[in-house]
Length: 104
Figure 1 (cartoon, one colour):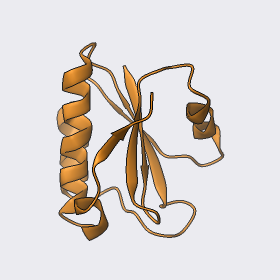
Figure 2 (figure 1 turned 120 degrees about the vertical axis):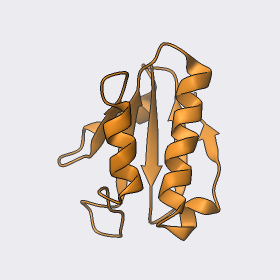
Figure 3 (figure 1 turned 60 degrees about the vertical axis):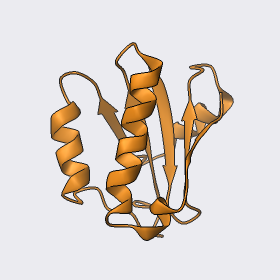
């Protein structure tokens, strides 16, 4: 399983593969958006990204999101995060200009 942090005002997407990473603890702020992607939810959640159901902006409730991707295959999980970035770039130009970075 990996977690990926998506930030919009300062566009970047960062993968955290180490569950003990201190940056992941920042996830627990009030109102933090978390999307879980696994065998049961993948199709539904990708459709939501494609339909722009998840909006991004500068306000506190829309400026970031964490993805929790769990397929027990790091390469596949990373590919899913990259695909989510591609879907976001269809609606938000800044995401088309950033890559997916690996933090840990």
